[in-house]
Structure formats: C-alpha cells, structure tokens
Image 1 (tube, rainbow, N blue to C red):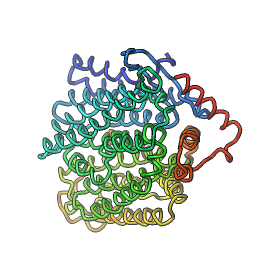
Image 2 (image 1 turned 60 degrees about the vertical axis):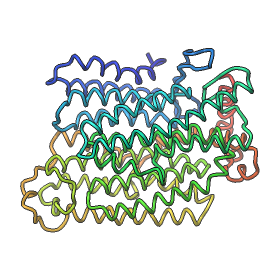
Image 3 (image 1 turned 30 degrees about the horizontal axis):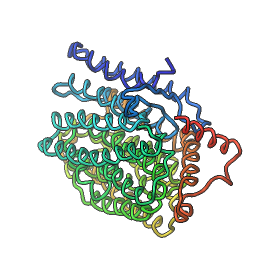
Image 4 (image 1 turned 30 degrees about the vertical axis):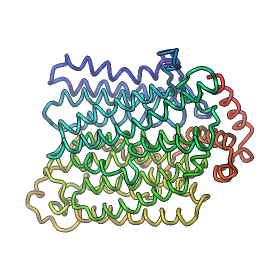
Length: 524
C-alpha cells in the first residue's frame, strides 16, 4: 500500500465524492469528515515514511499513458511538495468540519473532495501533462464554490477568476509543448517528464521566452502584480471555506511551480529576470499593504494582506540560494496556516452578524474573549512575530535575498512593518474600545465545532515557530540539491554569480546525494 500511497491520496477523495451522491443529506457531514480524516491520516503516514535526510524524489510511480508522445502517469514527492500535500489534506478536513449551516451542504462537501483530488495531484505530478490536467481541473470546483455559494457579485468574481487563470494556463501549455518538442529534437523521443527536461541545456534566448511563457501562467495563479485584481473579488465573494482553501492551498500552486519548473529548467533566465521580479514582489508587498490599510471590510484586509505576504514568498524564491528558496517554501506553509486561520476567524463573526464591516464591531473582546485571543495569536503570526511560523519563513526569505541586494531587501523589510500597522489597526477597531453596537452584546463566543478547526492551527503556528526543524530540514535538503543543480547547469557568468553555489560548504554526504539524484534523473 505504501508503494501506491500517492495514488491513493489523489484518487481516494474523488472516489469518496462519487459515492457521496448516494449518502443521505443528514449524514453527509459525518461522511465528509470521516473521508477527509482518513485522507489526513494517510498524508501523515506519507510524512512518517518519508526519508527527510534524502534529497531525492520518493514514492515515485510511473505508468505509461500515451507512450508514443512520452506522456506518463508519473508522480512523486520530495521535501518541496511533501508538506503542501499534508497541508491540503489538513485544511480540507478542518474546512469540512467547520462548515456552517448552508443550503446544498451535500454538494459543497462533494465539491471539496473533488477539489482535494486536484490539489494533491498538482503537488505530486512529475509529468507536465498530468500536472496541467490537475492544474486546470482545480479551477472547476473553485468556480462552482464561488458561483454557487458566494455573495451578490459571485458570478462576476467566479468568471473573472476562471478567465484570468485559464488564459494564463494556455500560455503555460504552449511552453510545455515546446519543451517536449525540444526534448524530441535532442533525444529523438518525446517526453513530458519534468525530470527529463531538467537534463536539457537550452540556448539563452530559448530560456528567456520559455521562462516568460511559464511565468505568465504561474504569476496569475500567485497572483503577482499586476495580475492580482481577480483575487480580492474572489475572496470577497467566496464563502468562508472557499477563501480558506484558496488562500491556504490554491495560491501556493503558482509559487510551487516556480520552484518545480522555472528555476531548474531555466537557471540563466531566472538569474536574468531576478531583479525585475524582485521589484514586482516589493511592489506587491508595499502596494497591497497600503490598500489593506484603507479597507473597511475585515475580509478584504486579510485578502490584501495575503497578496502582500505572497510577495515575500516570491522574493525568497528568486533569491536563488538555499536560504531564500527554503524560506519561501516554509513561508508557503506558514502563510497557508495563518491566512487560512484568519479567513476561518472572519467566517466565525460573519456567521453571527452577517457583516464584515469593521465599523459594525468594536469591543468584541468583552463578549467573545476566546475568539479575540485566537484572532490575536494568528494576527501576531501574520505580522511575523518571533516564535510564530511566519517569522521563520520571512526571516529566511529576506536573509536569502539580502545576499543579492541589501537595498531591495531593506525595502521589503520596512514594508512588512506597514503590515503590522494595518493588522493591529484592524484588530483595534474590531476588538477594543467600548461595546457600543447593541447587536454585538449577545454574541456567542466560539463553539466546540469552531474550536475544533481553530485550536490545531494555533498549535501548528506556535510549534513550527518555536521548532521548525521537522519541516525545514527535509525542505532544505532538497533545495540544496536543486541549487547545486542550477549552478552546474547555468551557462552564463552572471547566473553563476547570482546562484549561490553550495558545493564547498556542503558535507560529503550532501554531495553524494547530489550525485545520486543526478544519476536518477538521467535514468528517468
């Protein structure tokens, strides 16, 4: 069973979703919780069985689908994708368990299970066509969630979300087809294996154009400035569970794809575009932070805050060294936990008051002390308070880019201070002061169902902030392999200078692992 655990993790939720159509309405919630809990336990088993000291791909499965064109069902995980798979199963379970009463609850749970299949598939795929199929399929459940259960502008928000991401994906697909064709010209056979593509050494001009094609698809998904305009509408109109999954998992597809595709495939182009992308990332951090400060809707504050923090992830990714890339991956996990928790918390108060305007609140800490405490902890994590999960990722991301540019890193760092300002300001408006609004005087504090979803997120936030080694070490081991590979593959002197070479500082065991991985990739 362990040999096929990834396939089980991918297709078990989809099979359960199909069977869910015959489950009675009054039992669908228990059914959804049971299925998602089994999936989460399986993902923990995957983590437990994973060799964190190795920088190799593990739990690999490779079955031919279209042999004539080199399309295979090729999946596997490494230190980069493992924890995002675990995070996807974790949030699906918490999301189903915390669902408030809604119409067509059965359809919502079935949709979430289908969405879980696509998320795990994206982060496990090692064949570009399989990756693309799961990437595109993930649009359909989220489109349905926003369009069927969203706010007054839900149709506009869902269509805008779909058109932006689908258009970017088509450009990305053109790049994938060209990569397969270029491999055919060099090797004489077709292949869509990402590991096969790693072995290609592309001319500099090809790298620039292909990097741009992949960049458009990934940047829209993140979303990076100026492609970010679909996200505030999606968050603003989506139901709570839609915003949670979107912020915690779906946005990470773009940043993950940069590390899986763009950096190792096009190291010279990544070095060439490093500073322009870093400037875009800093614009994301500063511009969206300022917009967040001006918001009156607390959910929009969290939404724009999410974009701002994604800018830090992009900055760490294009630091092109171990510290920056490892920090960006860890921050993906931290951002998923914290932003997902904040959207859950916004959903808690929306269920009680059916408004998200901060002017309607004030003094909530008097009537909802447990809620205020949990919100305060997650808010501190969001602004990067030491001993919380986001601090580790942000510190490493900025430390990594500091090696490339002191000035740009300082700009990014000072912008994070703005984040503390708008988050603390929002907290003050909603929770402190006198309880003036009579509608808030009889509000009930968080119940057991809500605590079941929120307490684990608080524990993870503090645990990985205090002791990040169980997650950071496997990430770091794989990133060391990738950075070394990029450095050896890069042809231009500029790229060699920008990509931090770790060979001299790496231990003999790490060097041996690099050689083993390169041999395995050549065999693939």
